[in-house]
Amino acid sequence: MGIPLNTTYSTNEPDKLVHALADAQHGRCTLIAWRHKKIAALLKDFGADPAILLPDSSWPDDVYDWVIVLHFDVAGHVDQQRRIVEPNPLP
Image 1 (cartoon, rainbow, N blue to C red):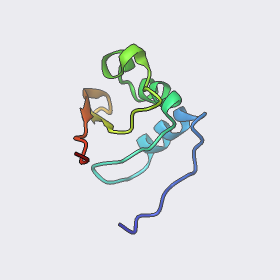
Image 2 (cartoon, one colour; image 1 turned 30 degrees about the vertical axis):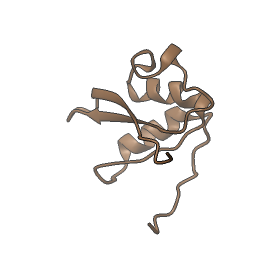
Image 3 (cartoon, rainbow, N blue to C red; image 1 turned 60 degrees about the horizontal axis):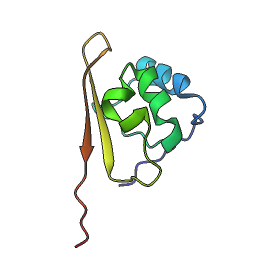
């Protein structure tokens, strides 16, 4: 796609990423790839509820076909959250 990756923020500092996204101009959609064990903390910092989105509030180590979609209202608060399970293209 020719889009450069932004690796400015460590998975140990999700709060800094959340603040940067809140303060900066960006497109309508942002894709974030994060370390499995750190996703619950990232979701919390965005204002989402990992208990709703993840089993036992944790992303399983062997799962790579999920996408979490967060929608924000005009005030910047999560007003919709859901987990999408991508279909497996292999037979």
